[in-house]
Amino acid sequence: MAFLTVFTPTYNRAHTLGRTYESLFKQKCKEFIWLIVDDGSTDQTKELVRKWQKQDNGFEIQYIYKENGGMHTAHNTAYANIHTELNICIDSDDKMASDAVEKIKVIWEQIRDKNYAGIIALDSDFNGNIIGKSFSDDMRETTLGGYYAAGGQGDKKLIYRTDVINSVPEYPVFSGEKYVGLVYKYTLIDQKYKLYVLKDVVCEVEYQPEGSSETMWKQYLQNPRGFAFLRKTAMIYPISKKRLIRDCIHYCSSSQISGNRNYIKESPRKLLTVLCTPLGRVLTYLIRKKI
Image 1: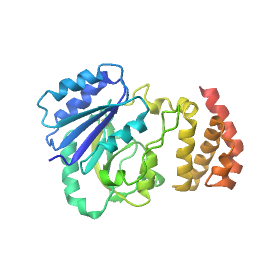
Image 2 (image 1 turned 90 degrees about the vertical axis):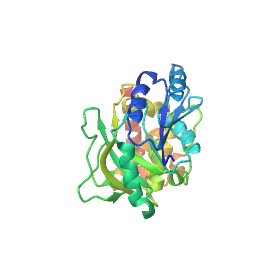
Image 3 (image 1 turned 180 degrees about the horizontal axis):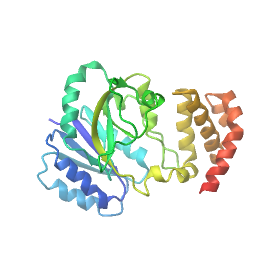
Image 4 (image 1 turned 60 degrees about the horizontal axis):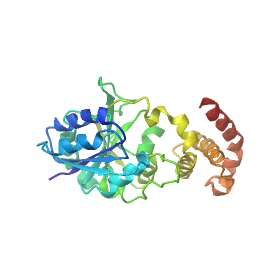
């Protein structure tokens, strides 16, 4: 019986998806489903997955093709089709760490009844170096926002209960845009639940030159309504005063880029938004200059 769905959003990554598959094939514990959400690929992704589906892998492979809409829409599709107790996203250029599924299962059996939203674990690069900071020795539980507010750094791997991730609204879709930060759902979950801390690496990552983390400046210009929405949510649930001001400046900038003249009226922090408007214009200038 599968207790975990490993879902992989992918777009034209047939050249890297194989290493994701190999890392799953090598897992000792095969009590998981691999769900691939193809976000409109035009390469050989479909043929590659069909070949793997015909093999005796020890785990089920599910494949869904959808029109290209961006990472957040692929996550929406994944969550609508996941039926296992837990889920974890492993990107199409990353690898599941050795014995990661077994480690997740063992720890989850110990904490299943403690009302956690799930588990937060570590990412590393392909050489075994931890991405950002590890967890302190005395940290047993945290929220995602709480971890970063306390000085945490770097991407972390999130293993959520499926009922919890589906208990908050799905990612919104803005016409003509293809980006809404995944942290939107995580922020809402933080308000009700904590995550159990697993001090093991469960995912090995490699950042691609054309990946979203490497093209963020361009994303600001191409997806301003999505970013404004995300910053508005962050201002409702700030993790620190410093971050609140930063998010407000970005909210002003994204609203200016999108041409939204009502952004002050729509802001959850109207006075702060008025004060940050000049800095938002400076940021908008810097973004355009950067691009």
